[in-house]
Image (cartoon, rainbow, N blue to C red; front, side, top):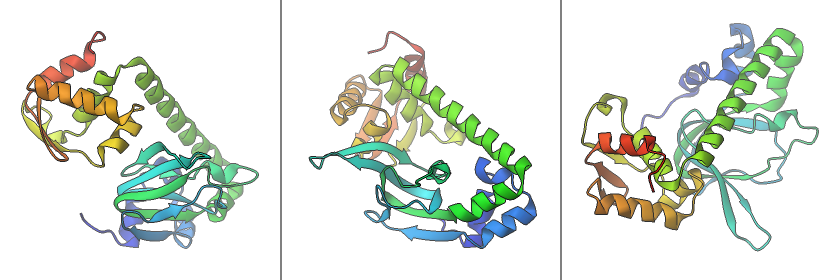
Amino acid sequence: MRRLQLDQALDVARSHPLFRSLDDDQFCQLYRSARLHELDPGESLFLQDATADRFFLVLSGAVKLYRLTSDGREIVMNLLRELDTVGEAVMFFDKPYYPVNATVEDRAQVLSVSNRAYKDLLRASPDTCFKVMGAMACRLQKRLAEIETLTQQNATQRVVRFLLGLVEESDQKQETVQVTLPVAKRLVAARLAMQPETFSRVIRGFRQRGLIEVSGPILRISSTSALREMACDATSH
């Protein structure tokens, strides 16, 4: 995995909706508050209820967002991958506290930016503020559409959609491809809003039908066309 320097990380961040609306001078101002974090699995990015003074952009790896119940059970809320952000909405709260815990699952590089520095830029430029608000609204709409899709699809369709999403762009036209689960199966299941047992059952069914072969986190898909048909079939089980 290629490790980025701060300048390179900011170049990547430049294309993200939260930074795309900033002009060069504004982006240079933000540079002074930016930090690049190198994190190993198990390291914490932030804790639930801690004061939220920075927001984060994942450049590589995986970051798990979760909450703990009163009896100590862990509830996974989301799994952040490349170019996902967290904490940006909290900066606009009257009392900015992180609502979840964030822990690294797969060695990660994360860029963080000061909430105060970012808000200062927005206060100084109403035009930029409206552009950022528009970008955040679009992202929210997209997220709501994803949630609606999850609620309308059964477990099999969700897994199929996820597996096809792992196929490299260069392999999209191939019938037989190999993909690697980016994180543990229980976290994939959480991302797909299902129990780990359900995810395992669906994968087992694919194996029995000869659609995939499994070797640890590596899955060999024997028929991408068959999976695409299943993704479109509202009666799949």
